[in-house]
Image 1 (tube, rainbow, N blue to C red):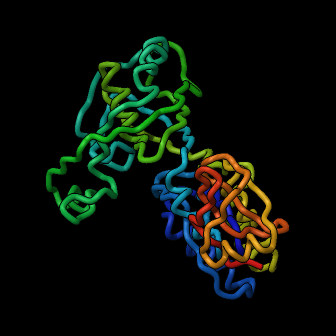
Image 2: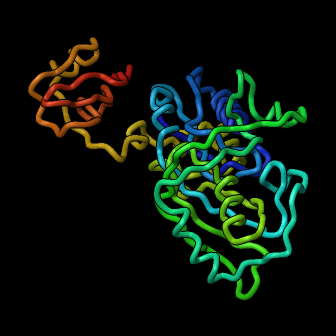
Length: 297
């Protein structure tokens, strides 16, 4: 059981609870003990793709955190909440309801490299404490602006005339806060707003097409059929090239040694021996060095 299980995380479930659900399914199926971790936090109020890494794939979970994400989200105009989502208390109101044409026109300002201030209700740390803990305690939270990249931003659904709400699709870099993006779009339109729906439709190379529900996960676990939902370790590295090793080369990488004279382009690569993952390597000028080694035979 070394690979990925993709959950279609339901509303109200935290990422760590998703990990616990996979561990429970492994126990129910009698699979034994495996390391389990998630590849990117998804807020309880968000739904969608939550990659869960099993076994040796947990060594790639950090890489998944750095990957791009795609979200669908709905902005409701006219009210801003302290949490920037529908769970918070209203802290600002506006009678302005933007037209669809105005929304379309403003999206270009939020596409490409932008600076954004994260929500006060976030997991970022301020003086060693989580920002959301400070905010819930009534303390003023001031977070620094951060640079992120919005690769694409489009309207998925919106009516005509004055808009009460609109649903957008955003392809974003790591570290992007969709709640902040929604807040800033509403402000740029002369209104205020908050997120009422947030769904992650893609995380790195993983999309909803391979994601399963919690009920399906439990069913597969009890039926000793989790392998049906398990994606190979390689699936988390679909965006990088692979190259085959000789047994001697594989042995050297497994010992942490570097390989010289590798015919591969500079950058990261996935090294295998007879389709068995050996290591994620960094190639520079024909020299391959191990980034992450996999204990698989």
